[in-house]
Length: 168
Ligand code: NI
Image (cartoon, rainbow, N blue to C red; front, top):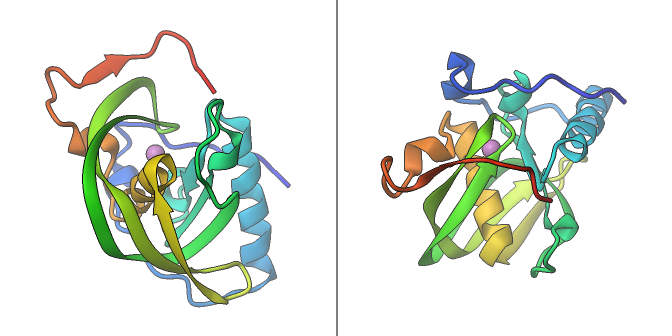
């Protein structure tokens, strides 16, 4: 396994749209292992998307079991070609991103979502998530469409905060 380099804002490549994964092979699973290592090495890393390391494929990883405060979660999820099909409720919450290391910001997200995604073996699963985990999935899926939380701030003037220390 190898830790991969993270692209950071304002790198233009972060605006690129990622393409669906069509081949589920050993090369893909090797990449998933590297991506997981990269996520776990980051401060507060509860999620990562492949385009953040320069691979423009529709792959995200989420693991909300590692947060300080316990939240409802599915543990470690490999989400390939994820598709959110239902959104319910709206809530403002604070988000950070490994590609925007110096800031956090307030973003409105759905409180509950239903989505499907393939795992590393090409098997499709359906999920329902809520709260912090639903927020993480929505945040990571945005990366696949070239969006950062900076693009969704409630207010650019009042809802962007400079980080003092990293918290996990
Ligand atoms: Ni992010």
